[in-house]
Image (cartoon, rainbow, N blue to C red; front, top):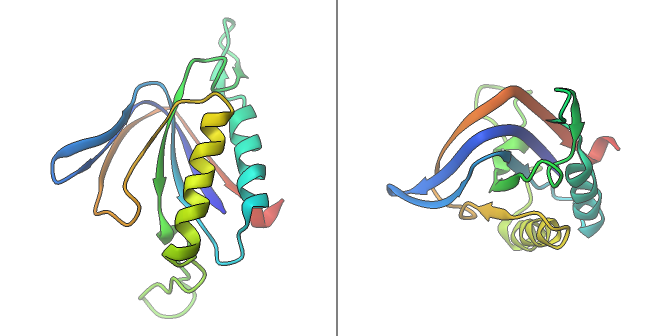
Length: 148
């Protein structure tokens, strides 16, 4: 799994002009699921994200995790994170998991974050979404479970 985690002051996702998910302070996460990913990857990623200390404490240092900061998560499935651009100009997405594998893992990811006590809003898997955000910092971190 590959997660692009952006600390935001606001983020929302819309489909056909209708807001389907929205948060204020927290993380906007783009999540790519690889063909070899399992529930172990989900658990690892949830542990890392829930403990990631990138929110400022009372002294202005990045020392608090999302729960301590009272943040929420907007989770967006994004198969294009596994684009292979080595050959030619048209990306290949052969490494991205097919929906029958990816949907249960995406849902497990969101559920495990909720079970960790974090409020989670989502986009629509496979939907044509408009995502807007205000990156706070900016702080953007990439975690790839293939590199653990």
